[in-house]
Length: 201
Image (cartoon, rainbow, N blue to C red; front, side, top):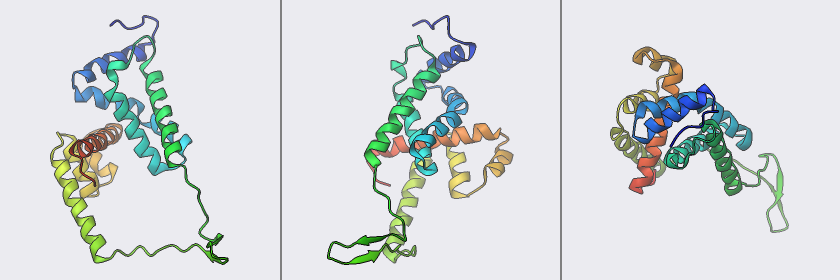
């Protein structure tokens, strides 16, 4: 399959990266994510309006795109194709997760001719919840051990040793953009591992 000669230099470079990624080249995956991690994240954020959801949806959009690389036709720029996938995935997320939100100070009808204020439960976990949380951590560590380098090391440093991005940059001698993109990719790989093992974290 030949690339459209009218594509820009960057789009042509993207096409070469896509070809390499399709062969399993992890460097190509990382390079794509370094280029588009922030643009995709901010695109999603504008739609879902929640930074935590936006990060998850963006990761899922990359996962979906990487799984569909064979469907990419270089008649159009890869960025256009990627943004369309992210947009559609965001719309799907919004449709599936649309819920009515209430203020914590709002008085609501309790359905029994009475009115009450919304109360927020305390954050203290009981012994059972703490045990479940510990088991989740153990299981997550097992998944992390299955990752290839540099993803395993980066996840360990960031999420288990709780290093800042700046500390990871110094210890790994990598640009911060590369560190963030590889962590982004690592989360996508972990998500795929968990889904394939049919385990619930």
